[in-house]
Image (cartoon, rainbow, N blue to C red; front, side, top):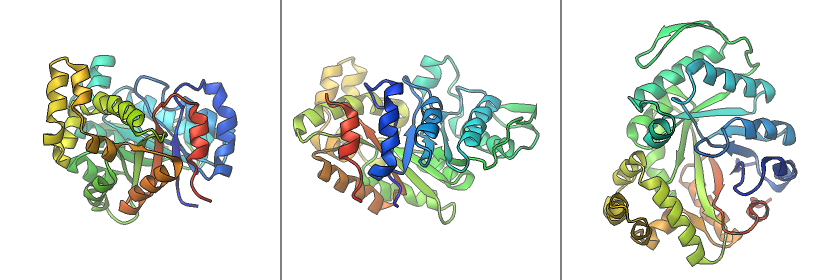
Length: 320
């Protein structure tokens, strides 16, 4: 079965009410559930529930920030979930953004490339059960050893946008977690990851508005695009991808405090490139384009369209 994942928890669905849906996912054709961590649920609790409610699915974080937990605490969280779901857990880590790290958590968003590299190296050592005493360039660990060592360490992935971090993902982990890109963009980013060797994973969160009403879908997508692509790391990513001219008006309006103008300035063609939308069959075809371009695991990130997202999950299941 080809990998095919869904992002949990679904917006508007209480965590306890995910149980029935998660139990169905494998029969529907899904292989994976992936969490994230920004302003909603933490990354680990939904996966801990899924490990029991859906005991065959692969579990993944996309992603856990490397700043917002201390290195030892991050290792403990990862080890605990890996021990609870042997062989099924993938730990995706990344720098996150200055908004989450600095504005929301009061921490310095300092040297993100180095911090991710150092955290990946620390996690490799810690999750193998060894005692770690190491002065890394961005933090130091003195005498830490996990007391709960998982039978199988989690697979490690690194979230990446531009060439430096993409290459780091290929060198220091089993692959990259990517997001907010088109299917054609995958052909630009994937080769950097695969410089690290054969078999590297490219896991992509693909945002999706499951409605055949194109105007409604684009309105929903514009809000999500503006919320993300005005963050400096994503702005730089899309400038590198070549969307700088097409998104310049959005950035100018946003910086001027004109939120409505920023939404209106996003061209339809950019919306259609970055957010999958349409009836279920058309959505599946668009997701397949990402796989054809080099994504090894597509993760659907469902945007709220006014209906019950559980029904959208069922409707979007892969062909069997």
